[in-house]
Length: 254
Image (cartoon, rainbow, N blue to C red; front, top):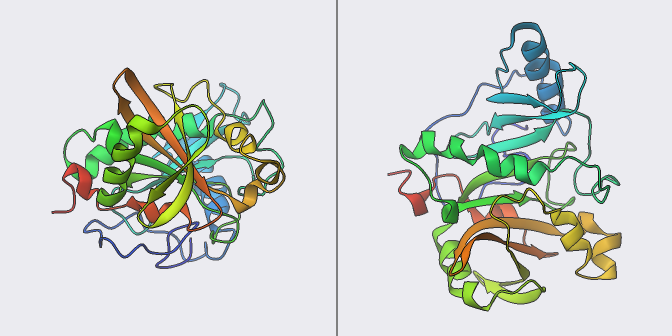
């Protein structure tokens, strides 16, 4: 976590958070800072004292101390912005593991962490206000895989809900704040049975070969026939730019 920059992308310029995030030790700088912080502090504190600080939480897949799992960390810039980070070393979207059917479902884990946004806003944030984003390899500033958990920008919220009646379970183009993305409806209320990277790989042979070039946004939706999601992808502007750490759409940030 470089000083003054969110892992995986730059500032979005939409809102300046009024709440600062956790203090990050000065030793953790550069592109490996996020992995070092999670593995050398959060995980060690959890194993020794059942205290995940400076992370919000540590979740293991089994009682074994060396089992796979993930950490949830408040973004250093503060606001309604959290990161879900695997405990094991794992590069970003250029990782060869992403299409492994045995890979943990980190998107479902990130969706489960969305309740942390309530602390910033002061009330429950509706599912339709929440977005999960992964940046492209070229846009990130951390080598460790991480998913951003934030609220949607208000204009993104409006664009996605206007497009909702036309979304299907096949990829189709949608325009969001002036950029064209490929979009697909996900008819699953929890993401538990969905591998978003496999959906992305179905977009085209290029997407399967070069997942690292594609950014991903998954946003909660409430369709006329039930709860679900929309997944967006593009090789253009990185998806983190579609999110708002001020959570304006849900009444946060004053």
